[in-house]
Image (cartoon, rainbow, N blue to C red; front, side, top):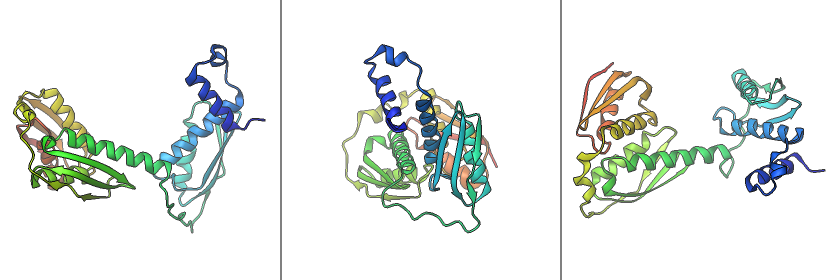
Length: 268
């Protein structure tokens, strides 16, 4: 008899390949449905920073998810239950996860977990995007590599200012724990794009400033309003302190096409 994993793999392969119309239109078996539900719950646990390191097991039968394993706090146990209940078709949860007062964290794996790889890929993509839409992009040829939140920058920068700005953009990215900035400073040829910087649309600038805030560790972008008119960015709303205010202004200034930042409406 085929295992659930094999059944699920077969169903996915048939759906992707589309080789058999009759098969692809057929209703999946109960075993396939349950395997999908188990996979969805487990994957969500693997991606969740509060659950990924826990030894949790999931089994599903006729809409009932059974959870087992150990966690250090009751909030983790409840979180696991709520995630399972959020999956389509799960009607009830038998939460057998045990809360241990003397919980011992599992030893760190030599290789990265699935969740860590996803986090690192997200960080790498975010840092690359922030560098691409920064005002220093034309003077940067940077490679970004992330492992367990530690970012490595390699490549070239045309000025020390560009190198330092790249490092700041990286360290202020959500999920980044450290940055090793190995960018080498080399004089680059002037870029034609620099001469066209004033032609960048205000809407594009606003979007990139908001995105920069959203992915920043030390700026709460949800509390900051952003408007752009002829390259002048106006920031409004409230920040927690002067350090957050100064960082928000600096991050906005670093976006390509920004001529100046008006922060009079950004209060503490």
